[in-house]
Image 1 (cartoon, rainbow, N blue to C red):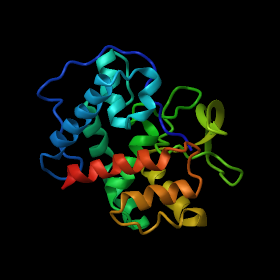
Image 2: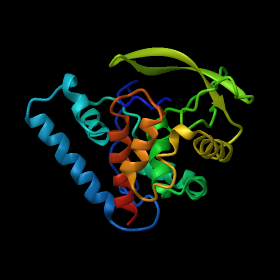
Image 3: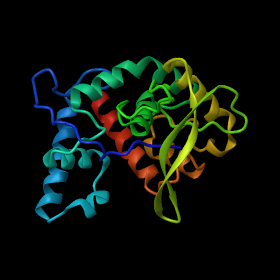
Image 4: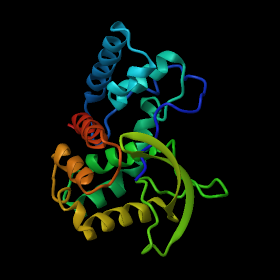
Length: 234
């Protein structure tokens, strides 16, 4: 599977605004302020210890967002307003998929956010149009739908390797989420993730054990992000 890279093409940094202040993912509450405070503390500690580009992997996904912003580098994780808009946009489909899988909707949202860079690194077809494939699902031999080729990063023997792979393409987001849920339910490799409820770690590790991604840190990244989204929605 493909999860978005978080330090790529450069864009101008966005200035913070009242409208861009974080809000909850599903429901209300002030959890985002606490989460962003934790992220800021993490990146501050990292910088104070002399961390640079070579140590970025030691940071969480959210921590790398703060590092990128301090360096003026683009990051797939948009400012809080963009993240919130993404979460709200996919919320109905995340709830539907979560009910089918027996997991909290925040876990599904976190998975989509990780794989697509909060919707800012979508898989596109040859014409540049979105495939709506927010989960990086590849087009295997049994797939009979539309296909799009895209460059992705795979880990082989611990090393990141760029490859061009064939991915599934969908007419809309609803189709993407339904196919995602169906794929997990039908594939016995992912039984450890099914019925995980609100247990972000169990869900993430169930996917990783099933071979969802080749990144050795995949379960940790997904569990951390899902846990923070759950904290926001409380």
